[in-house]
Amino acid sequence: MVNSNQDKLDELKARIVTEKVTPELAATATQLVFGDGNPSAKIVLIGEAPGKNEDLQGKPFVGAAGKFLNEMLAMIGLKREDVYITNIVKYRPPNNRDPYPDEKETFLPFLQEQLSIIQPLLIVTLGRHSLNCFMPGLQISQIHGQPKRKDGQIYLPLFHPAAALYNKAMRQTLIDDFANIPLIMQKLEPSLTT
Image 1 (cartoon, one colour):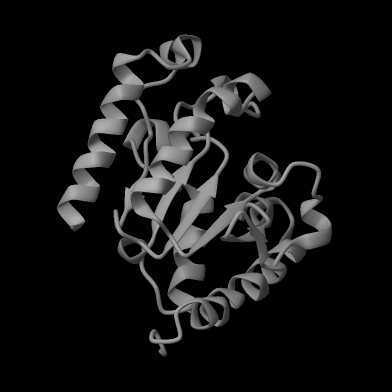
Image 2: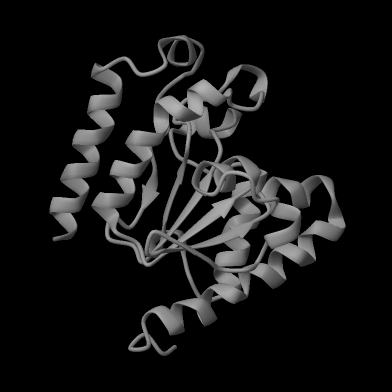
């Protein structure tokens, strides 16, 4: 089954390129940054868009924010290979600007297809862009770290790991919120007692 999920993800990735999704973004990016990790993961983490390091390496969250994300995963006994990591927008916006609403909208069906292939128990949204894609109108500052259910799917909104790089107080908030993941997973899948 792992292979079939990976095959489906590879086909989806190829389709984004052949269908020339957001050609303006693609033209300024080095490559498509589709996703990384376990294609059958129980947990999917979703950021907003690739940055410079991600664009160069072709993997999401490989820069300083990714290093912090790896540390937080380790704190709860997980590695990148245990989860799946992706972004809403799959090409780096020029100069690391925020993705435009139409760019997020264009990529959303591909992200939804990605999620329907993986079928995670928990979707962790990293940052306000990711949160607002799934739950428009909610403020991350008010609901971070609190699991939310929508259409049968459980979401955990968290601040973006990059926020901790600019604001040291945010670091502990993120670590504390991240610590909720194993507790939520135990409720979602009681057989996974760690």
